[in-house]
Image (cartoon, rainbow, N blue to C red; front, side, top):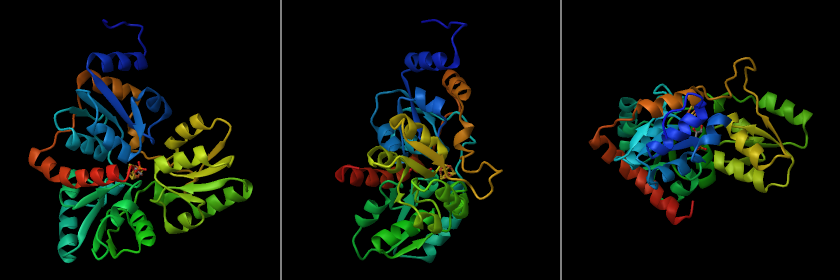
Length: 317
Ligand code: 13P
Ligand code: SF4
């Protein structure tokens, strides 16, 4: 089918996807209009799994750079496009290669477990990768006497350490979105909505996790709201997830947890929100920006990611 001048952006994207045998993988933190045109929406684990198992020639990643890099590492023969190359991650940025190499050398003999929210270089320095939906199981899959380095999220690391009781040294990184949730504002909201359950991502700080009725990855939070008999929820993660929560539970009420500074809008991930429908169209059309990584780096980074995927598959995650 040729180009039609009256096509809107969504129609143009759908046409290009078909013409180019491309798929769009979108994270739950993308805006609703992007989630609605994606071939697959998921958390970081599900997106990595889907990047590996599809027949497309092109993957357009509606998410952030570390996620697109993970897709490229798992599917090196495919063209992986990221509509805005500036879509980074404050957490991944908090762990620089030289600093992490030094950290590892200062704590010899420890198994290095890194969260998927890291650069390809950090993954290549790691023994195994985890995501927020399998971190506890990945740590538990290691021999009980194994000492661990966990990077880069200190909140997820502390949460998993308290769950597993393992000997862990934790990198001091945080996500600017999740560390900004205000305990006081959440408790005020709870007072105004006493029936609402507080549900939060493990990247939130301990005081916020402590008042939560449920802590889980984005997909775990979504699942919880589908199966829980409650009628309203205060959601302590990036509010993009509320699009799927609301779609699955039209009668339930979802209230975004407020950040410390109510004027800053920082409960939205400004990196995730760099992706727009217009940029997706332009990127699919021009086939750029493309994720390009050195083969040797990809080979080294693939091993710890594959280890995680094998364990997740065995455990049915
Ligand atoms: P998920 O693993 O839940 O997808 O979270 C990714 C992320 O970037 C959280 O901030
Ligand atoms: Fe990174 Fe935080 Fe954005 Fe997730 S929400 S992509 S951890 S900056």
